[in-house]
Every structure is written in C-alpha cells, then in structure tokens.
Amino acid sequence: MIALIDYKAGNLTSVRKALAFLGSDFIVPESPAQCAGAKGLIVPGVGHFSATEALDANWRQTVRAAVDEGTPLLGICVGMQWLFEGSDEAPGVPGLGLMQGRIARLEGNAEARLKVPHVGWNALDIRGQGRLLQGLSSGAQVYFTHSYAAPVTDACAASTAHGTLFSSAVERDNVFGVQFHPEKSGEAGLQILRNFLTVCEG
Image (cartoon, rainbow, N blue to C red; front, side, top):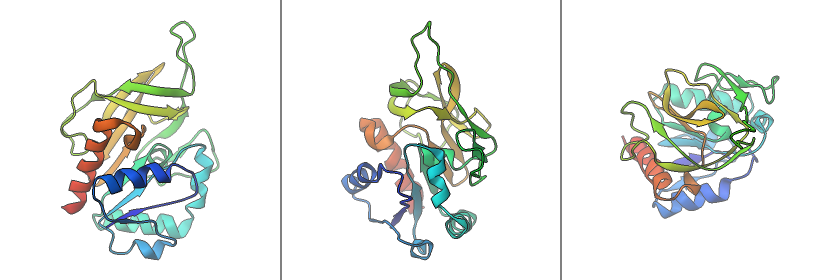
C-alpha cells in the first residue's frame, strides 16, 4: 500500500489515476497515523511552496520517521522541492531538509525565448545509475510546469536546462524526487512510477 499525501495543493487526481493504471494499492491518509504500514509515501503538488505549510510538525515527524525506517519517499513537483531546506518562493516556510540546498527561481532568457514559468516538455540529462530512472535514456522527454527549481547537487539523478541548469530528479538512498509530472509524462513517466513502486516492494 502506498500513502498518497494530500496537502490540498492540487494534482492529486492525476497521480491517483496513474497509480490505479499501474495496479497499485494506495490510500489518501487523513492523518499522519494512517500512514502506518505504508510501503511507500508520495508527496505530490503544484503551485506555491507555501502550500507545504499544511504539512505540520506531526506530518513532518511521521514522514521523517518513515524515511528513517527505510520507507521509500517520492516527492513530485512542489513535493520534490519540499525535500530541500526551503524555497525562495516562501522564505519563511521550511522544507523537510532531507536534501541539501534551497529552491530558487528559474532565470528566463528573452533572446532564446525561454519564459518563466517553464511549461511543457523537456529532456532529462540522466546522471549515474540510480533506481528511479532505470529503463530511461538521457534525452527522455517529460512534462514540466514550474517557476522554481532545485540546485544541482550530489543527489542529482537527472538535470534539465531552462535558462538555468537545475535538478529535474534527485535520489539519495530511499528518498526520491522529480520536478516534472511523471503522471503527465506518457510512458517515460509511467516507467518512473513503476520503478518507484518496485523500490517500495523491496
């Protein structure tokens, strides 16, 4: 069973549909206590980083404890940004701090006609041999919609360029994140979700 954490930031429906398509059992817990026994946690999200403030101390403690016990965690879009220390989009709202660094606004490029927000399909430059992106090759196209992004650190599993080079996927031990929307990224996105579910099965 996967716990799909809803903090009222939207985009839950498309993730639910993707998990159902892949035959995954999941729940949307109404309280942190309902995450007990989950084989994996997914934190989706769209919009403003301040929405993560709804994940209060009880949620944060529950997620951290699950990760410490070895439960896989996947953050999607703003859910991935929440894995970091914080975001310039909402400076007073802390991230979970499982990844080092802060989220910063993308820089557009008028000459190259690169606008912010970054919306649409773009390529992954895959780095290393992690578990989340198995079966994909560099150049795989996935769907983005965001104005802020994570720095490229040693946890970067894939990078993407849009005016700025940023981490489009991160992986460290049992913590994973993707800046794009795998549930809206066709077969490449479904493969990423399959990979995460495989990790959850151990």
